[in-house]
Image 1 (tube, rainbow, N blue to C red):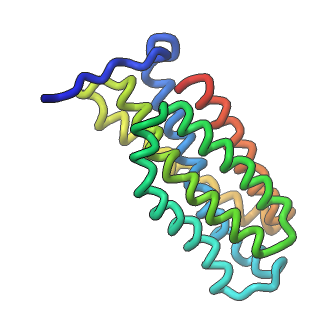
Image 2: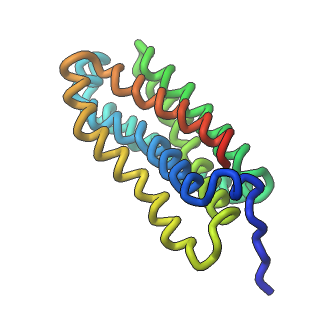
Length: 193
């Protein structure tokens, strides 16, 4: 027997395309911090006086924590609303990125990387639930692809601009930009999902 998914209460107010756009923004910003560490590795290495292995550990810790938290994210998303899961995870991620941008300690960056990566998993799972709540079954493949597009879109933007801005100004500036985008995604999750 197949369960019938009732449309989300906000689906009529905002429309499916707005929800899909919000989920793309959410997963894009969710993945971005992990990649930004790599894009800014030369500046981070110089500022903190760490070798390539420690700079690489920031990326590994981020996506490793995402992988581990993915095990739990489905259980959380099944028991809590998509809005709460996505908003809470993006809210914590935004705070973590602001902390990273102001950090003067490599160990703080590593802590932020682990907690930020752990936030990315429920963002991904929660946005899947959000899509399932508003997108008709026959259109979920296209909606899922549109959501997934947020990751390469934001990451490619970051890959181009982060090193340039990081070299010209500071490695902190791209992180501040990422945190601001995360705050926008957090508000969007509260309003739209």
